[in-house]
Image (cartoon, rainbow, N blue to C red):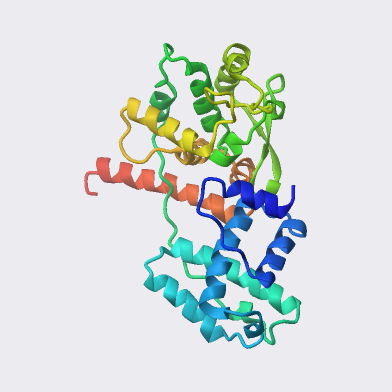
Length: 313
């Protein structure tokens, strides 16, 4: 699939993408062909860089005269618009890679990328729920519901593997090996990892595959594991709605999403004594620092226990 076709398909249900300037398009082609970045990442880069181009560069002839002051002013404008630090950091990361690309092509006289700093992000503790609440969530699908087997298998698999929602919706039947109890997952940047599946999830998925999926399957299924009523691959939005619905049924307050189950997967493993590096590999994190945030979750729980039960908190 070409980059243009990929981006077009990703934009089906979004605002029409702006046509990128030739230099930006050449950079996006480089990311797709040479770097093998995921389509969603390329779409995000296209949006951010088209905005950067309009605000700062404006023309192909203006690239050579680009200054760090102009780039920093663009970042300040993002702050004035009220964007959160995480959103600004993502845009700055895209701009830095773009500036390095321009320098490598000889279009920039100076290496501006080294002068542009990423804004400092607060380390936020991931939203998790306690194990009894997870059990209540997993038990919330109604056996009388037509799609009970699918929904139970989905919830069990999310908690058993810690997959991202994009990874779960992209899962095909061929990637799940029930005999050995493993699945093959394609994460960010199409990086493959192998994740073991627990007995409870294995049983739920086996039952779904044997009894319900054959009745849902149709010409548009294309090997997808989780199918909608119409036989198409379940999408991200529907998966989020399902988790939110069952969280409500379980009486869980607050924002519970598929990513909450990913956070719970990591937190409960580490709380049980799992090695940090193993959890990093299971989650598909490139940097162990990303995984370390789950250690803070357990520390927060210990502080809460201390506050509740110590005679002089």
